[in-house]
Image (cartoon, rainbow over all chains, first blue to last red; front, side, top):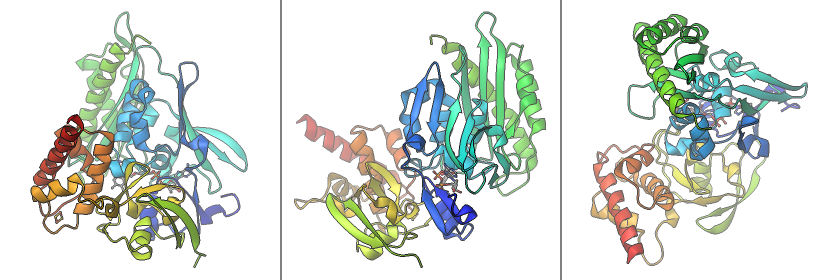
Length: 276
Length: 162
Ligand SMILES: Cc1cc2nc3c(=O)[nH]c(=O)nc-3n(C[C@@H](O)[C@@H](O)[C@H](O)COP(=O)(O)OP(=O)(O)OC[C@H]3O[C@@H](n4cnc5c(N)ncnc54)[C@H](O)[C@@H]3O)c2cc1C
Ligand code: FES
Ligand code: FES
């Protein structure tokens, strides 16, 4: 990759890249298959060090991993929403992020759990918070000679959990019209929210980290009033467009609906997540 | 044009070596180089599942795999499903339930169903529908396919219990 610069392109599952090459959208002279590098294929979790999720791990292996389902249910469900089983056998979270689609399902879920992308290149290594990774549709902070190695994700705090939901016109196999991810930490003494992160997909040129929406929850009990405020703030943070999948107005409405749902779901999960 | 590459792989249990161009898909290699034309070409975008093969135990769209990626892998295609002694039970049940009409989708459905039953011998109907969601059929309306897979699973578990 270092030798060939922008003539080379990384390959993981190929579920975006091979289609783009066939359509002539991308025409790399060299394709470098990264998925046989061990560091890109591991899932390792410990309470002390949190999660390291290899960039090339296919979605299906994430869903099959007990630590992923238990500690990061929202991120796990986002990965499990990608395409069909045939696609999940190949599609990686790293590729989902590097492809840079604003509608990619795992990106809001990654932002919600405060994932950092570990990037390596000839200049050395850097850790990029996922909310800073995408710069425009199909564009990211990755330089042509850099690759994404893994995600580093903190151990969930006690009494916290995450959730991701999307709206699509069909039951399966479609691109999100809106996707919302949330992670919520509660104080078990009084059920107040002590920390929150909310992120939105498919409603702007890049996935959106909706800080104001999360701020509307922190310090509050998660009742209808505070959740409504968060939903309104999320709607205000979105900047959707009209397209064949839905009008901007409809999308703004769905942002509010999904924000309410994922906040409630993440909070329910946080309440039962104590014993760890 | 880039040089051709030698790829060593296992297809339907047999060690196989082929030459391919780096940009050829596994589907092209199977059909055009190896004359295994059972895997069908539909959309070439991962949507229809007609090209489904099983790679290291996982159902995969061969149109989205490069031929060179087959190096060292274990690949099962529709050609390996029937045994010399007869059709696979999934194939028999597809016939009994009339789960095919034009048949272009059938190899893909059979491979997805096989991958499911290999991992989960007694799936629920919901699990079957989920496992087959990546396969499109324009003729049958799906219900007969689902019935055929349920029947095949029951037959297989009956055979195990006996
Ligand atoms: C039928 C179908 C349905 C789909 N449904 C969904 C869906 O519901 N939701 C959704 O979000 N997505 C969906 N997708 C897209 C999804 O499969 C991809 O975004 C996938 O996650 C990309 O991962 P990959 O490993 O296949 O990446 P690849 O295609 O191998 O790569 C994608 C891009 O990222 C770059 N790249 C990959 N890995 C790295 C790395 N480690 N370092 C640097 N660059 C890298 C590549 O160069 C390429 O540009 C669907 C795709 C198909 C074909
Ligand atoms: S031809 Fe591969 S999925 Fe349609
Ligand atoms: S039998 Fe014709 S597409 Fe399925």
